[in-house]
Image (cartoon, rainbow, N blue to C red; front, side, top):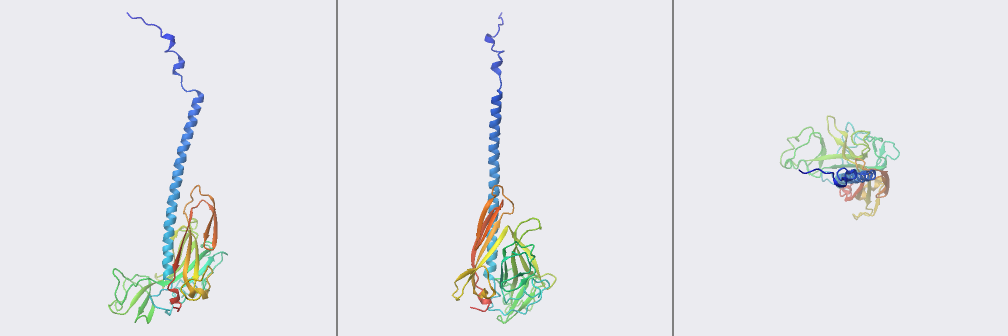
Length: 348
């Protein structure tokens, strides 16, 4: 029979052989865990911030490109009226809600481009253009202070009806204003189209009748997008529209995040088609000398981005803008030729 004996040196009952962490070791473990957690949290937060920065910057660049393309198209076609040189303005119709008191500014093509430099600096209205026209459809409380305002009148670059024939897939647009031209451009007058079809007598092959969609627009920067309190600067336009009445100027907004618009005009004083001087204070008599325009847009993110709060300076041509907040910003610019202004003003 095997006898039981006491464990040697008390190995089984020795408390020291099963002891846990000491208080110091426990505190060190907690500290290391906290440091590791903070590091992981920091990496996560930084990745979130980087994603926000990249996402907002991508939006800025996309909106900037879209804005520039929109304005470049308007500039390049400003003063184009169905290809007719020195168009003698058809008798202007009085629209029910124009941008000036007389009610016939929108359909008067004598001055195809007007400009206001740094509008709303004094928070007063109406705003007087380079041609001396007071635009009373713009609300001083809506415009971003110190931004430029541009008006453009033109027809579309392509016809809606040519010699009595529709282009492929084209139709008349109800509510659209058209310039109707016939007899090799000798006769022209305004048409406020009320249906999706032009008159049957015009829509006949070899009729000699052309229709060109007409646009009168005022571009400006509004200090909100959808509601007065959202604070999102937005590129907007007052545009001639149809509707049930003979025509109205109606507000439309295109692109959020356009915080400032500055425009400089290149003037050709000796008519050699090359700009001799650039100016941001266009005068009425200088309109016929414009050959190019420089467009500067300051784009701003719609939301604030953490970690970008610092003072930054932006150069928009001759204007310096200083900002210190949490919004991302980006400048886009372009130079565009204005080939139709001289023809519209009766100069080669």
